[in-house]
Image (cartoon, rainbow, N blue to C red; front, side):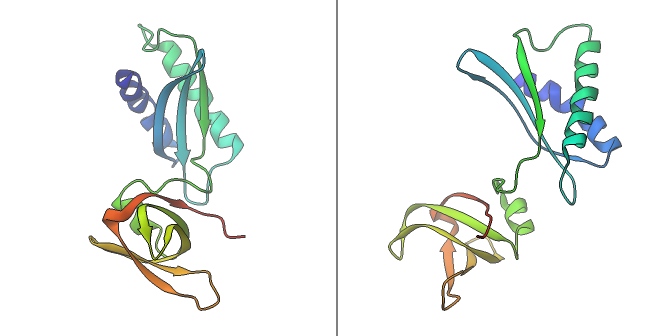
Length: 156
């Protein structure tokens, strides 16, 4: 399956570059009895449905034009944005999220909580700093080794 993902990445990158988009992720998964090829794209300011349709059409054409089908199974192609609550998967994405509202899930409790939401103030190798949305606007330091998952969050 990783060959499918790598092949699709190679095919989609030039399409995305020509439209000033960038690739967030590609996944090829089986859910129930169906296979899904999911391509997540983004651009500054976010992508539109028309952007997704454009990339889907161009990628479909490129896949169909290959002499040998890289995906022998029947599948559904989905091109979309990673979403407003996209995961922050690595150090680069965390640093780009400084000054944004995020959700952090922890492996174990910190101050009696396993999850926090707040504005990301600082990221370094050891920890992150969050300003919580409580009455005191508390700033907490979360050790990086405690972070199980982090993502952008929508503040209600």
